[in-house]
Image (cartoon, helix red, strand yellow):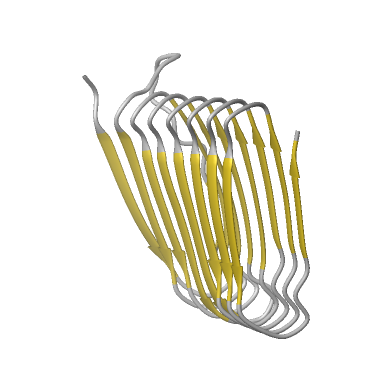
Length: 181
């Protein structure tokens, strides 16, 4: 079993482009930790294999996180602090994957696509111009979304059988669309 850990901390105006895989076609138990402080940060990361972990933390404004995981039992966390134009795009392909996205404020935008069975999605946005898009394709997927304030919107599509969806919105110009097909 090969285990690899990467921890990267970057400051202002430093783009980070990553493709995280091991040398073989299957890289299991990989860990990626990225912390970016300052504005205009970009993360592009991909992990292929099983039981991989990716944790992305970005603070302040104009941050962009785009992470793709393919395999079984992967964990993905994207946390973005208060700031203008923070965007998180997460994609997971496989089974028993877990994705968590947390954003605090300003012009939030988050999208998550999970393809496979028994996946779990959890997204939280606390304030300002929120938007969440979730697409789960497969069977037995579970999605929890929470927005607390301002111009909220959630669009969620779950295609397949035996899905569970929970949405909480507390205030302002709320809008929810849930399609279970």
